[in-house]
Image 1 (tube, rainbow, N blue to C red):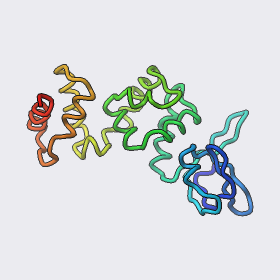
Image 2: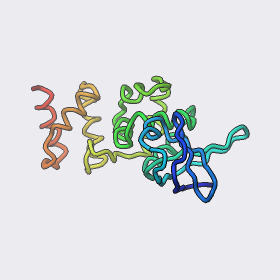
Image 3: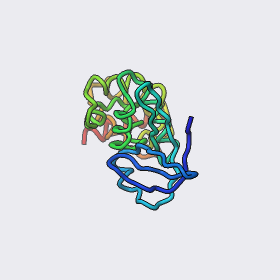
Length: 189
């Protein structure tokens, strides 16, 4: 299995690049955005996923290992293949994707081409426990932030309202009860 490749970009084409390493050229699918950023002649380091099927042998590459980890998690979701997963990774940053999954933000996921409501729901259901509440939006309080959002949603506020209200609460306030009180004040404004 090829897990990492470092070499010179010798060709760009759509969503892939050809990386020369040791006299061999490896075609690596990186997504359209990343392919546009990688100039011919540039030396790159890519973390890769080697995808082998009976009809294909493909490499998918990422500039950081956390992007590769998220890509691998997406592949665990029923109905998500490597082309869909790289499309998601190209459209949404890792932190935003973790936030969308942790908070159940269907709108964020469905704006990705090829991801409908049912697939977005499946991504959230399958990955919510795996990604945890690691996004910067939710802060370092981990599960407490998720519970705060759940509490506001239980009170009848939308997921979006709840997230926005909690995002505007001072990070100096650590107590979940006090954070909820502040969030409610923010909603009423």
